[in-house]
View 1 (cartoon, rainbow, N blue to C red):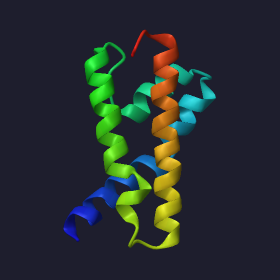
View 2: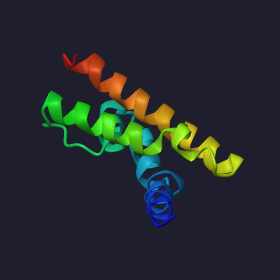
View 3: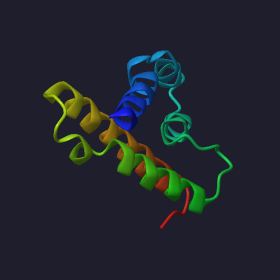
View 4: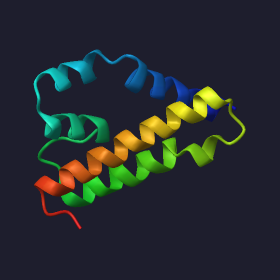
Length: 97
């Protein structure tokens, strides 16, 4: 139960407090937003980017929250979509495999 609470706290800090995300959207720079979502630096190696992507997908995947209420599952689904978008955005710019 404590692990779920810690994950939810991190999720709330990342998603629901959208001031940083809005700042990135306003600058029209999708690559910076993608790096921000994956929680990596722009000069990170492909291995670090992929590791972060897999870690975040494992942490926020909706299947991890099957016993949670519907709102939590929807938020986790949104977060998973954002992580997936960010990874593919970085993949387009760089030569990740």
